[in-house]
Image 1 (cartoon, rainbow, N blue to C red):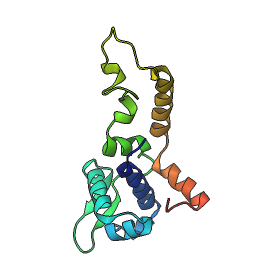
Image 2: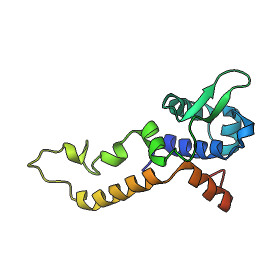
Image 3: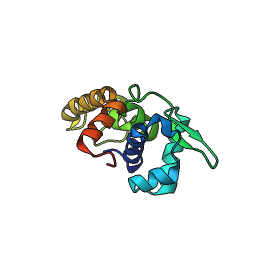
Length: 146
């Protein structure tokens, strides 16, 4: 459902949000090592989120990544849109393109009505769930390195 890039990005954001504010920036090698993710791939994902103003990035020997925004204001929806775009929320399950893009006189795919409810629920969940909440949930279940 979500790309590996998106799942890695979510894990990295939760990881960064769980770091003490006094820690400042966290280097890419530490993030990738702690999360057991490939460094070059993760670096591209984090740079993409920095361009979207979700993360802050600093180059150099004391550089690294930190959250650009308060984790209470960053939602799963923000991350998914910044990495994967809106296809998961708009695309038809069976056809290319969005269901809204189908011709007015054509029939929807056989899964349209079922998936439309699921899509609505997914959008609601992703818009409501903040990174702050996910960090709190991860701490309570000791899953911070998910």
